[in-house]
Image 1 (cartoon, one colour):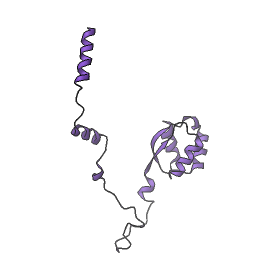
Image 2: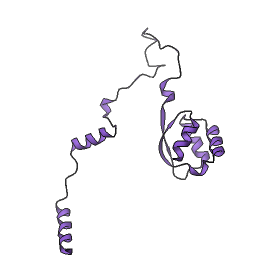
Image 3: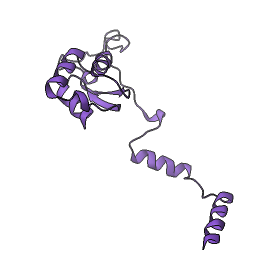
Image 4: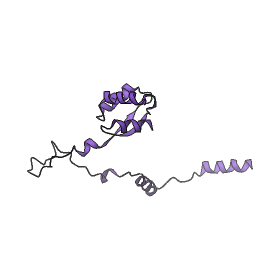
Length: 135
């Protein structure tokens, strides 16, 4: 029996199983929501370079804040970061006011439960940010 495992191991070293094909990789990536760079459609954000005012086109009606401001931001929190460092990072990324985040984290007792790693965080929602960072 031991000789069989040895021979099987040697055969696997000499003739490794084939990896996934390009099509299988693409199918798996699409299942995770990934797209090719060419498939991404950029939308103008307005302001300079958007061209709506200079070309005489219709201007967007005033309304709530732009979608970009309500979107989520990918933030990577380093391992061992302190509450103050995390608050400064969130403020730097434009996610939330650092002092407000720090005060709410202390008030809710979440200071020792903040997780390192990459997180998509909602702009301006301190409670939502704390919930995602402590899950």
